[in-house]
Image (tube, rainbow, N blue to C red; front, side, top):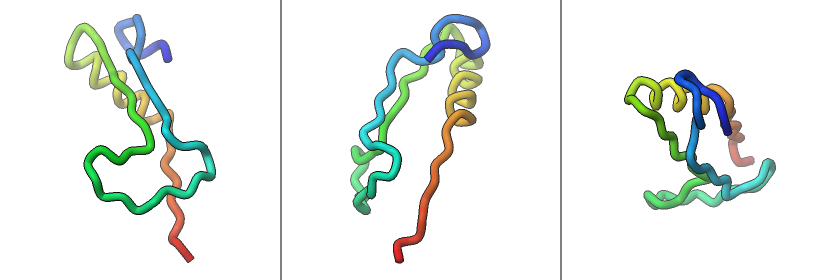
Length: 66
């Protein structure tokens, strides 16, 4: 992923552990996640701007179990 304010890479690493449409178990462990992104930058403000850009780019869709 590239871009973000301040130029340079917007993230240093990211990983998705699930695919679209996967059913996720109801886990409450702190290490349980669908994925992660590590954001880097030369200042706190640039990292925060890049983080908000990543959050704006993704949509979390949930459904009630029926």
